[in-house]
Amino acid sequence: DAKTTQPPSMDCAEGRAANLPCNHSTISGNEYVYWYRQIHSQGPQYIIHGLKNNETNEMASLIITEDRKSSTLILPHATLRDTAVYYCIVRVGGGATNKLIFGTGTLLAVQP
Amino acid sequence: DADVTQTPRNRITKTGKRIMLECSQTKGHDRMYWYRQDPGLGLRLIYYSFDVKDINKGEISDGYSVSRQAQAKFSLSLESAIPNQTALYFCATSDDRVANYGYTFGSGTRLTVV
Image (cartoon, rainbow over all chains, first blue to last red; front, side, top):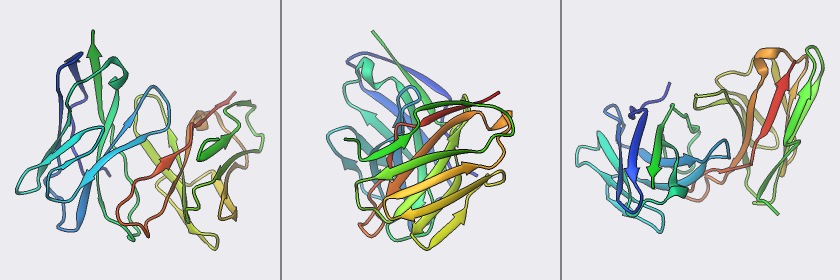
């Protein structure tokens, strides 16, 4: 079973920041938080991941709370192309035998 | 060319027929996976392989089989297709020797069993 809880849907105005929350209250010390997105039945796309420090890349920022029980994915300037289902996944990191287990994600609708 | 290529992209087949979905990758990754997605749901893991000699069942392997013909090729078979196997199927690869890199997914195969 997925170990994360996400809202089923969210709206965001184009050009504004989109903040997508995720709860992972049972996360273990060696588990990372991964974010993927899926645009209209395409293959999921990796966005970002982190362990305990905040992370930023060209796509997004990931803010992880100090207790690591929740996190927020931030798309700083959402565009219509960011409309997608966003999946938050916790998983042991590299070299592990754990697989990616997907939940149902958050459908982000970016409005013009 | 795509890093992970799935064929066919779309397929309609009849109940009881055997069908094979193919996946090939150019990323040189050891690990390959097959997922299925039903409408409105997340992806569910069918089978996975950590190297050519390693095959493992996932969450929903009943009714499916796989073959890892080479590092670059991982095929999914439905021995006797049934309508509730109608779904979108994704192949993915990963290289977990490289710390924490993500999975790369193919574009999917839409399978309809009538």
